[in-house]
Image (spheres, rainbow, N blue to C red):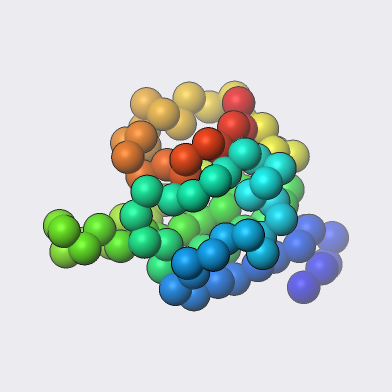
Amino acid sequence: MNGGLGRYYCCFCVEDISFVPIFFTLGIKSFPYELCVIFVNQHYGFIYALADREQNKFVYVELQFCNGFTDINYEKIIDAQYLPEGMDIK
């Protein structure tokens, strides 16, 4: 889908994130919990849900940014245990 808003990717029950090119640009190596669903827009950010099976819960995270960078200190809002490993959007 490309209507001037960039490329979108939608993944379900993803174990291998290597096919999502924007993750390499952002330095993302992996997710700390099982990645269940993800929606990515290469210009505006991504939304994902993680499964924390030990706690029997889903964790929903939305990170918005402009062209791969943000000036919002998201680490004060989102617990570091739910952020992608290696991510650099500062």
